[in-house]
Image (tube, rainbow, N blue to C red):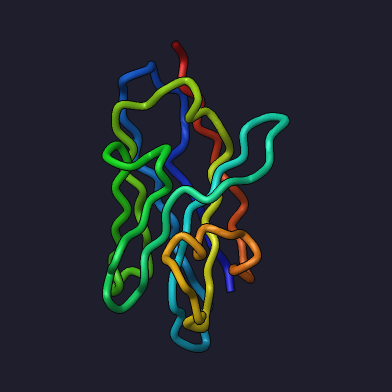
Length: 129
């Protein structure tokens, strides 16, 4: 299984970028794909995730109302549309996949990186202020 993240770049504050995560090599269905990010000197944090079948999205509070996650099931691709970018959004963004549906008490639990087994290589987003 491979995840290929792309779409990062340099953008001014207030600008937009769209990240893509293409998944290939699956031998079975998967449950969800998520986006995480890691800023220099900081821990990796969950940004958003989306379920494959229902397409239900969930966002971290820090990106809610600015980022939109979506998926194209036929293309095995998940997108992260990022608007009104801020300097604090600067980070390497990773996508990750979870195969099995978990038992969770809250959707926020899927922003825990330990829930995911396969990761892409990351794409750098730099927001200049």
